[in-house]
Image (tube, rainbow, N blue to C red; front, side, top):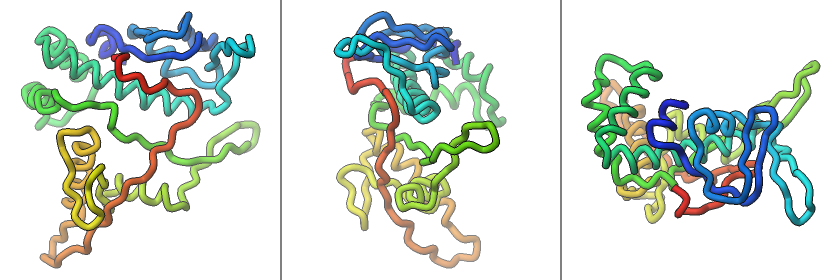
Length: 239
């Protein structure tokens, strides 16, 4: 993680307030488009119960009470930003691309079909992708005490979670903006379209029978994304 962040020259995240977490070492001194290096980025994405910001109107530090859920939302946002930074830097700099490739091969287990050349080809194919629109989801949950431990218990018996799980199980395809429910035609030049095309392909292949019988139509879904806690504002200029 740290090597990838450093390989792209840091990752920028917008902040509306002075922010800190004394437990992880996170500290953003002022509202800004703050650039994280590897070690500091790790302190940011690890921040959970200690995440707090300084509310100038109240003149006091305010904690993010969403704990794990807030951290997940910030992690998802950071991953999108890191991906965009990698695409921005790696597509124009062979040196950065090589550093990213080395970091990935060092820290990710790959099969014998995924070669360095294949990874470079994948990166080249994604060079125009805008990652800000990639959808992310969090399993809904409720806080409970089990013994002396505070835990999050998944809540998956609702329509939204059924749709989300169906996507990852290959039982549904992703409805992209502008696509009809009966005849989705994803725009693969957008992040939503690219993600929709990938998920739809996985769903299609998973549904193909081995006995030649025509499979049932795969439903098209577009579950609402769920974001928790204090997350970075939408600032396209901070990248």
